Structures are given as C-alpha cells and as structure tokens.
Amino acid sequence: MKINRNTRISTLIKENKETIDVIATVNKNFLKLKNPILRKVLAPRVTIADAAKVGGVNIEILIDKLKEIGFEYESEDKIITNTATKKANLKESTQLKYIQNLVTLDVRPSLDSGEDPFNIIMKEIKILEDDQTLKIINSFEPIPLIRKLQSKGYVSWTERPEEGVVNTFFKMDKSKWVDNEIEEVVKKSKKNFDDQLANIGDNYKRIDVRQLEMPEPMVQILKEIETLKKGEALYVDHKKIPQFLLPELEQRNFEILYKEIDCNHTKLLIYKDN
Image (spheres, rainbow, N blue to C red):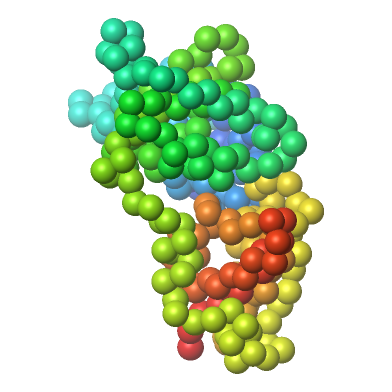
C-alpha cells in the first residue's frame, strides 16, 4: 500500500494491524488504539504527520518504521497543509510579536492525576484579554485542541524547550469565539431530563463512569450505545459533561440531556428519538 504524510492512521491499521505496535515505538500511548472503541474514535482523526508530532520525532523516522512492515512511501507533489500545525514553524521573530502578557498553564499535574484538563484550558481561553497569550505546558502536542481553537480564529505555535516538554501558545481573537458552545450543543434539545427519563420508564441501561480514568469514560459510553436496542436509552453517572464525546454522539444521531447534581456528579441521558 502506498502512503504519504497525510495518510490516516485508521487506513494504516485497516491495512496492517502491526501499525499500532510500530507507532507505539514513537509514543507508547498509541497502544491505546488496540481498544476497538477508542480506535474508532481517534484513528480517523490522526495522520502520519500528526502521529510524528505527538511522538516528538521526525516524520521520516516514523515513515521508515512503516516501510519495515510493508508500506510504500510516495512523495506528494502537493502536500495538504495540516491546519493544526501550520503555525508551528513560524520564525522566532514572528512568534515573539504574539507573546504579550503571557499567561502560563501547566496541565501535566492534571494529566498525571487522570483528570481531563479540557475544562481548565477552556476557562482560561474564555477569560483571556485581547492582548494576552496562553502558554500551555504539556508532555505532548495537543493536536485536537489546536485544531479546535484554530478553527475559531486562534493563532497557535509550539516549542520543545527540552525532552518530554511541549509548550503550546494560543493567541485569541474574541470576535471569533462562540460563547457557551458546549452548552449550545447539549441544550439544543428543548426536552427536560426528568420528563424524558419518565417517558423512557425502565427502558434504559445505567452505567457509572465516575471512577474511571481518561479516556475510559468516553470509551465505555461509546461501547454501550453501540449495543442499545431500539427505543432504549443510556443513563450515565459522570463527573461532568464530556465535551469530546458530544460530536461523536451528534454524528451517530444521538441526543443527550444532562442534570448536574454537584461539582463531581452529572447525570447524562443518551438516546435516539424514534
């Protein structure tokens, strides 16, 4: 099979299951792709170029490893620009003009404790002033986050000051930010959580994912909705509204309602309208 830097990891895995072990030599976190549910969610979104950047290695190294298991690399006459990383190669003089009133956020402790730093980052993003720049310190390049914010007009670039440390910078443009985006997605249904639960009656499956570490809550929920019968709903006890899950549910035509109990407990009701 012929590949290039823009070939999706999902395509490689479909062609050769050894792909997972090969890219795991770059970053062991890729071993999580052995989970079929997680693979279904993540692999279609990550290209060979993305995987190399996440792993912090030159793309040629990853391509050479893929060649060892039978893939054939072809150079692209016209390379598709990856919007998630197009600012990463800005010259230093260009980068410096964006760094004004720097706000620094180290998310490594959150990740080490199994906590999703997404909410923390988004809170910081929303309160940034026009002349401020957010610096996120992480152990890898947060490509999904970069894509999400760049699509809303944020300028971003990364630096690797030392091995195992990645600094990602975001310069915001308030005029392009959509407030309460998450709430809009969840609340677009006019239905009430309790009313809908009453309508469903006993026709639901209930799971509690509050004690699971990331990304297992999302994996478990996606696994359960695949087995739902017609007219059946999934009732989930979660710590919070799972932002990264929302587009996946929308893509599968599921609706989601929620009810906040306290800061560490949110009830979710996931279902399809008949």
